[in-house]
Each structure stands twice: as C-alpha cells, then as structure tokens.
Image 1 (tube, one colour):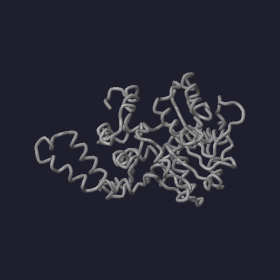
Image 2: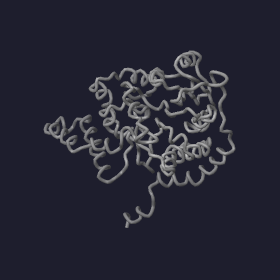
Image 3: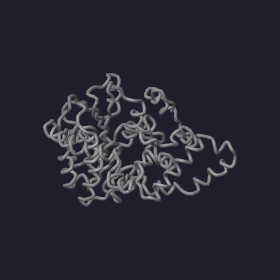
Length: 351
C-alpha cells in the first residue's frame, strides 16, 4: 500500500518545483516582458565596433567587478586564434585595472546591469553588435562558469567542424531534455543565417527566475535549433564519456579491498561509490550531468576545464571530486591556478 501511495504522490522536491513553476514563474514571465531587454550602461570602444568573421561573446559576472586571472588566460587564447573577443559583464561595473587589461586583449567590452542572466546578456550583445553581420562565419557564446583552461585550447577549437554540425557545444546533457550545455556554444554560418536563430533570440526576455532561464533558454536553444532543422553536436559526446565508466574501473578497486584498510578507507570507499552510482545510472538510463558526474572522464579525454560549481559547492554531492588535484597532476597539468582561485572562494572546506 505504501509503495502504491508513493507512486501516486510525487516526491517533495518535485512537488515544490511544480508549485514554483505554476505560481512564481508566470509572474516572473510578466516581469520579463515589462523589463527592457537593453541593459547596457557602458561600452568600449565608442562608435562602430569592427569585428572579425569569427566572434566570441564572453559572459562574466563578479559582484565586485574583479576578473579572475584564469579568465584573462581563457580570453587571451581565444583572441590568439584570430577571433574577436567581446567581453560582456553582468556585474554593472569593472575595476579600472581589470578594464585596462581587458582592453589589451578584447575587441570590445560591454558592461550591463545584471538582468536576464547569461541569455539576457548574450541577447543584449547580439542586438547591440548587430549580429550576425554579412561577413560573420562563427559566433561563440562562452562564460566564466569554468576553471581553466588547464591545457591549450587550440586542439579543442579545431574540432568545431561546421561541415559535420551547424552548432557545437563542448558537452551534451540528457537531463530534463536533450541539450548542449551552455557554458560554450558555437554557431556556424548556416545556423547564424537561419530563421530559427533570429526567432529564438527575439524570444529571450530578462525573466528573473533561473529555473525558467535553464528550461526555456539553456535547454530550449538546442531544442529550438534542432526543431528548426539544424544539426547539433558535442565535442565530447555523452556516450564517449559513459563508455569510460566500465567494469574495469570497478575491478581496479577490488584488490584494495582484499585488506582491512581498503575496506575501511573513506577515500577508497567514495571512489567505489561514485563508480557504482554511475554504473547504476547507465544501467537504468538515468541521465548524468557530464560536467559534474563525469568530470574525471572529461579530463581523461583532454577536456580543458573543470566546472567552478563542482569544486566550489559540489551541489549534486559527487563522491570522488576530492581526487581532482591528483588527476590534474597525473595528466601533466598544473592545478595551482585553480587552487589560487579556490583560496579566495572556499569557506570552511578544503579543495
């Protein structure tokens, strides 16, 4: 009887989510329609901004107007490929020294009010810069939600083959609905010149509810582009990542368990729990979050980033994330730049 009742009554988090979607979201959508979508308060340079055929709109937020050192490295590597990097911040301000350094790297800098999250900012910049222009071949949308790059970006960027797909993400997710994860989205000429591209961005409103932004825009953009006949692909496909979660990984843990220390060692136990949880999800077709659950597999396949949220908050309680420093070092990379940022972020926890 209890099992039957549980099937009829959804879990509490699901019920709360449904209540929020039915009550708060409609009001937020009204606010989004009443708000102006133009929130730019400063731009450099003044006047017409010349852009190369390949453009990056890099989205940033820091409430104090600071820019992390790794972000400078990230946008510098993008600019060195000949792409015009337009730095867009939702912070409403930038420290003078940060602005001065950005002006040495970027083609343009845009400061706007923090309304509409990433998609509101990207839409604002797309309209402000009149994108796509006749000569535009590629538009990359990127943000600062990643630590890294911990390895050069050149090989990653070379994989953006628009003969194979019209839109590229770095990773793809099946959570809620299939979508390319929005921390890096690259659009080729076919996508940029399509009717569905303009229609999608015209629909974006500065709605003040993040869950709506995720569903309607982060997930919605891949769904809209696919329905419009465009080909979407990930540089690190989901199946390539889960294929690394093999029985061999479990068997590697068995010899350690032959002694009492292995059976009791918390580090060993968390590694095994994580692998078993991944295997269980694969077996039951439960979608995993590549940038969190499959962080290790991504690094092993030369993914150049680690999600900031994973190391800062670990909201989904990924069991084996304590290994990240060891994995980065084993791959011949330096974890120190990430540790530098974590020293300023973490409170009452170790990296």
